[in-house]
Amino acid sequence: MRKTTCLLLILSACITLSCSKANTEVYGNNPKAGHYARINGINLYYETYGQGKPLILLHGNGGSIAAFKYQIPYFEKLYKVIAIDSRLQGKSGGAADTLSYDMMTADFAGLLDFLKIDSAYVLGWSDGGIDGLILAMHFPKKVSKLAITGANIVPDTTAMYAVDIEQMKNMGPLQNILGMIPGVDAKALQGAQIDEKKMAHVEAIIKSMTNKERETPSVMNSSRKRRIAQGSGRNVQEVNALLKQFEQMQKMFKQFGNMKKGGKGKMRFPFA
Image (cartoon, rainbow, N blue to C red):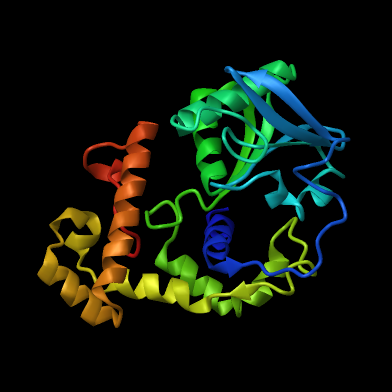
């Protein structure tokens, strides 16, 4: 299971879609499937497709239901798909000066109540993955199963491990691995551009850190960063960017309430 999760996370970071054929259905702006619900003082837009066990689709930051135009046709054959435009995104409303993950997950929980759905499967990526995690923690009875990707890609020990990356490399180029992911339309992704070098750069930077630096990134001063950059063949700006992303992930996990001082609960870089 952890290998599959690692694969999905890595691909989500390295794939830039440039598909030439779009689905004929106008997902995200479909009058036949679209609805509004008044939730927490805003008009929350969602679309429903198919029949069966409810499956909630949560898009990433700045996205919309349209992000799932290749997934909805597949999943609607198996589930009742409920794709949602998050607050202030897509066709959903909200106050432009106020937005948080807690607000968005409260909206999703409110929509489930509105639709009289006790529990549902939840699939999310990027911010949608973070929303899915918080939804499962704050409203556990509403989430029967959770599948996320891209929620904690850079960088923490729950996302990637050196052995996983090595095993994935043995499977061949990332382009060939696309067809191995359940639910992915490999033909629709034939125009995808895969950045094979991106993960290699991140791995090189992290492997150039000492064990202490991986476990406690705050010890890294200017001289340490220069040494890491030189050792990895990258530049200091890239090292700083990776550290900044890690800091943001730390703050997010503290918000989740699962960060413990020391021990297994302490967040650190992978490959240690």
